[in-house]
Image (cartoon, rainbow, N blue to C red):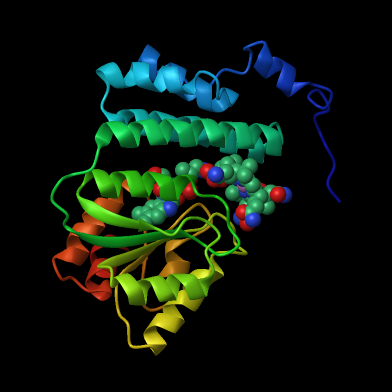
Length: 247
Ligand code: B12
């Protein structure tokens, strides 16, 4: 049985505190980046475009993406503490997605294509913010990204690998119930004699889990994706990538 030992916060309207600006987002030195973070925390889809474009006048797209992630980390904390619910998380995610899209436009796509990478978010999972960041970083670094989207059935991922023969496959999962799709993909590919690095990331996924099945390499942060892709394109196999990037 769980007993509350502090009752002081139970009648607090955190949503009103937020509207009145009392719930301030994580503080950073730079005013432009601070506004980006605040827009994500507030789920301010009306102003995120303007604020991100303003930040991009002086900042590198990667710095702006980092600010977007900082905002989302705060949203995660507020969700975990029971302050934010689905509606607030949806608005914050929409704001973040719009921000990533603008940063991706600014980063552009490198002219020379270094290789093909397939990305997806696990079957049953609609948490695609991590995948969108991975896409943007890979494209900006010259990789052709086949984006299968979110909630992608295992069959579809396997079929796409056969069709496009990518140098690397990535997966994102935020739920313990959906990450098991990665292991099924690994088994299916291995059974068909296909071997390629399969980088799996996302909040739910641990290094221990991903390295428990063949092909799996654990991706901690989206910024690793282009570096891992470079290794894959240069001919390193999944075992070499695992040895280099994981424990
Ligand atoms: C935003 C959010 C949502 C949004 C998703 C919007 C979207 N377009 O993504 C909405 C509101 C729609 C949502 C819905 C739900 N959610 Co939700 N959600 C979250 C929240 C608050 C933040 C997650 C997030 O986006 N983080 C920011 C991104 C950037 O992080 P990330 O994906 O992990 O990516 C980073 C790294 O992992 C890495 N990475 C990721 N992928 C890859 C790939 C490669 C190759 C590499 C190298 C790295 C890498 O790079 C990124 C950083 O650079 C979390 C809370 C939390 N504590 O995480 C809950 C959370 C994930 N949700 C949860 C749940 C339960 C749900 C719902 C089932 C709720 C419901 N009752 O309906 C539904 C899911 C429906 C479904 N079938 O998927 C649970 C999952 C619990 C679990 N462990 O299984 C969480 C953990 C909340 C909780 N504590 O209960 N959610």
